[in-house]
Length: 101
Image (tube, rainbow, N blue to C red; front, side):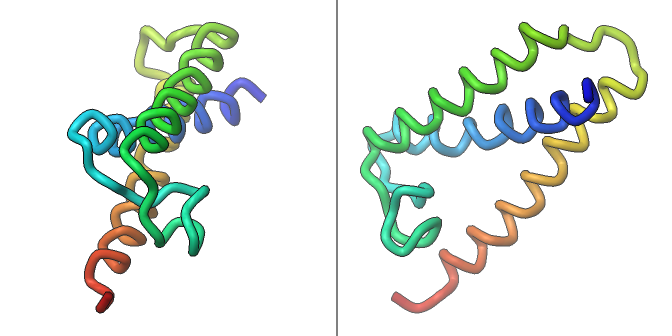
């Protein structure tokens, strides 16, 4: 169960980055609350809030399960969460940004 939690921790922490960055730059970016979901644009404030929610979720998981300090299965699980969500989102948002408006 610890590995699954750390996988999702990595996913939450990775997902907080684009939302916080867009929110802080005052740019619109897709969120799960946009219409259509994950494709339409949400306001910078909503992106900032969604980024904070992801950051808090990732930090809460780390607080509960501990920060992996050595290279082992726990750290691999955390990085796999980052890699999987990062790969998926980069492909998804690449397609969203390339689609004609």
